[in-house]
Every structure is written in structure tokens, then in C-alpha cells.
Image 1 (cartoon, rainbow, N blue to C red):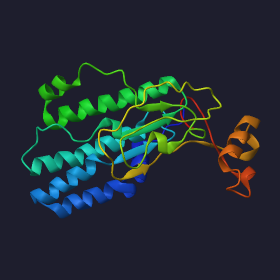
Image 2 (image 1 turned 90 degrees about the horizontal axis):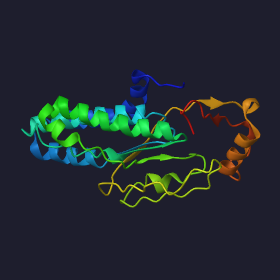
Image 3 (image 1 turned 120 degrees about the vertical axis):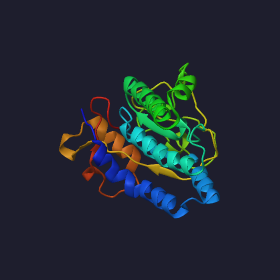
Amino acid sequence: MHYTSVPNILKVLNPLFLDDLRAKLEEAGDNPRKLLNLRHRIARIRVFDPACGSGNFLVIAYKEMRAIEAEINRRRGEAEIQSAIPLTNFRGIELRHFSCEIARLALIIAEYQCDVLYRGQQLALAEFLPLEAANWITCGNALRLDWLSICPPTGKGVKNRADDLFETPMDQAEIDFANEGGETYICGNPPYLGRKYQSDEQKSELKAVFSGRCKDMLSLDYPKKENGRGF
């Protein structure tokens, strides 16, 4: 199974946007207005992994953002208030149904763990159950799906559109965002196949994506589908 460790995930997420959030937190100090503005910014950030597997990139991003938010709340004297960071701001695409479910549940568990850590077990338990059946992790082939329809940079409307080689059902629930959105960050680490290891089907997928956009298309690596991980 392809797996990215937490230290390696942070090598991507920290320079991508987490370091900037921490710098803004340091800059805000104990200023209530600046802290509130930063909290509003964090609540509108969307994180998208188009090869999410079991969701580790999304989970680590969520936990790190909750830690920053918790410090904001502590400085504002609001340590026990409900988090303003919606789980549905963390979007992924994954080929396998089981891995999609694992990613969704991993995020739900991460939310509960953060609530226990920052707000206390009593409040965490009161809001944890019952679990909802809605799944905002899209099951499908990311080389065939329209990413902007799954994680648009602004607005709330989400509608899956696809020309999917793997016949993924497109009647899965369309889960809107909880807010209008702000920044969107794309992250992930799918494994790759070199040219000589690609099947005819994989070559046809690359052609569908890069035809007319890349002169040496056949030299490209293919993002490999492996054990529930990858495009």
C-alpha cells in the first residue's frame, strides 16, 4: 500500500499554507479583531486531495488547522465554542468505495478527537452522534472527473460531472459546502508508473487529459491506482 508519513505530509502542508497561518497567528498576538479575522479565514479554507486514499493528507490538514483555531479561541477566551471549520471543506477523490468511506470516517474521528482535546469530552460526545450517512469524498477516477465541480474555489454548489472509464455511479450524494469559500489548496502524493509500465487503458487516460496540451504526452508518468490509493 502506498502511504505517506505524517512528517512527509507536513513537508507539503506547512509551506503550502500552514506556516502562513501560524505566522498570522503570531502577528495577531492577543488582538481580538485580528484573531477573529484569522478564524474567519481558516473556516473558509478548502483542502483538496485528488488522490486521497484513506484521507491522511486531509486528516492531518484538518488537525493542524484545528490546533491553530484552538489557540485563537484560547486567546479570545472562547475555548469551548464549537469549531468553525467544516469537515466538508476537506474534499477528496478516490477510486475505491471502501477507501472513500475510510477517508470520510477518518475525518469524522479526527473531528471528535479534536473536540475532546480542545473542548472537553462532554461537549465532544454531545455533538458526535448520530453519524450522518452523507459522504463528501467522491468515488471516481480523478483523471476523468471535473475537479472544479467537486471542489470549486468559491460558492457552495457542488455537482459531480464525469466521463468515467471505470463506470463510477454518478448518483452519489452531492454535498454542498458550509460556506462560500476562500482559499483552495490542492495536495497529495499518488504513486506513479513510468511509460514502459503503463497499460493501454492508462495511456488512453493520459491522452484524454493531455491531448492538445502536451507535445510529448507519451513520456509522462501515470498516477498509479494501487491498493485504494491514487488516481
